[in-house]
Amino acid sequence: MTLFDDLGVLWRRRYWRAAIIAAGVATLGVLLLGGFERAVSAAKDRPDSPAGRRIETGAFALTPLCAWTTDLYPGQPQGMRGRQRFLVLRMQVENLAYDWLAMSALLAKDVVWLADGRTDPRQPKYTQRADDHTLPVLQPALPVQVDLIWELPAGTAAPRQPAWGVYRRRHVERGYLAGDEFWVQDGAAYRLPIALTTQCDGRVQ
Amino acid sequence: MSAAPRHLPIRWTLVTATLCALALIVLLRKHQPSYEEKVAPLTVAGTIGAPVTARNFEVTVKRLKLARAYRIDGRYSGDPSQVVRADGIWLSALLEATATREPGFLSAQLRTRDGRLYAASGGDRPKLDGVNLGETSLATGIPASGAYFFDVPEAGLEGASLQFYWGLGAPSGLDHLLDIDLGLDARALAELRDQAVPELDMRTRTDQ
Image (cartoon, rainbow over all chains, first blue to last red; front, side, top):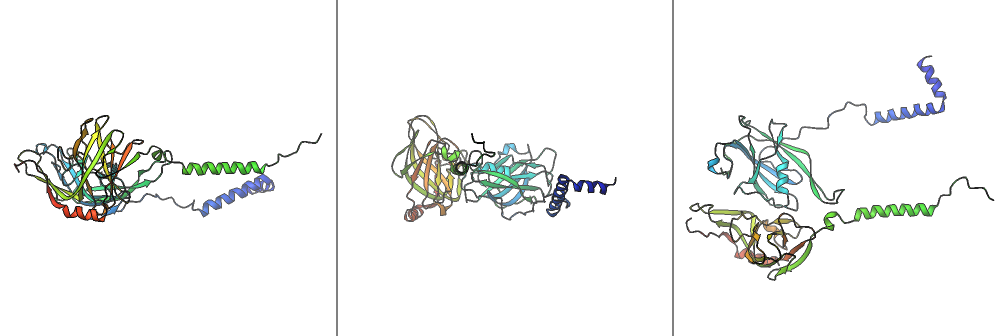
């Protein structure tokens, strides 16, 4: 008995005929919905944004100003010089939320140094105001210059143009479980390749 | 004896009542107060110049001042003086505060007319020991005179109110939140701006 004979026999049976039609309709549906097209990754490289350009992430408006390496980060006592190398990124930060609470901590989670230029994200070790080196309180709608500081691993030199990654952050008005409001990280937003400089406007070292 | 019906009759009133009950459940679930709303702080209104009492403290806001910057003492003896500039403008609220039941921290924030909240600056900005009450522990029963400093956008001052609460961080749920009307209308703000100096000298030492 050949395959087509089998199909003929099956087609004469009511339930098999319904099953064959259903399978055909399902296959057609999958075809029309693009199910047989080649799968491509939805992930795309995030756009690069240069120093001096203002970008918005949802919670913050950020303008990276300059970056440099140093063995004494701004405000560190002179006696500490030479013990550790640091990578410093100075940014103008504007809090777009309506509240100050926890925004400084969120900033430290949203701007990461990409140690190999594309991946290996690392959060800053210190976050401080650029002018008096105190802990920044990010007040709403009030731009402030902030230094984000990373320790460079011993024996490694920072590339001439290190890169940082910036995450988006989305406000949830009413969470499902407790009905509370919060900010949630919402995927990568930008990559910031910034050449190291020796001069930075207004830098205090 | 009549024969039993072959099918159960559909009781449409019961079906309608069930659907209504389900719709009501969904409606109530959507509009029930959130956890934050259930434990929200209890607001106590007050005005500038009058003492206002909360569960564990009493505050009297006496006056307000504006300044673009403060000149303060250098960090150590012999260090040059420092200028602490505001990103917006400095609003200082001069007041007397007393912890009434237990010692601890009194926090302050400014609420603008559009609902934005600005925290009082910490004790290290501007660093004015004995004056800046930010992050200063209050002793029970001993009034503390000083000021809270706010770095705020100048455009947000009109109609702003000053809020006080016990503890550090955010206002605690189900505890008092004082909301002091500062009377900052256009005329009051103009007067404050007229009195403001570009750089207010707050130095205490003479070696700089």
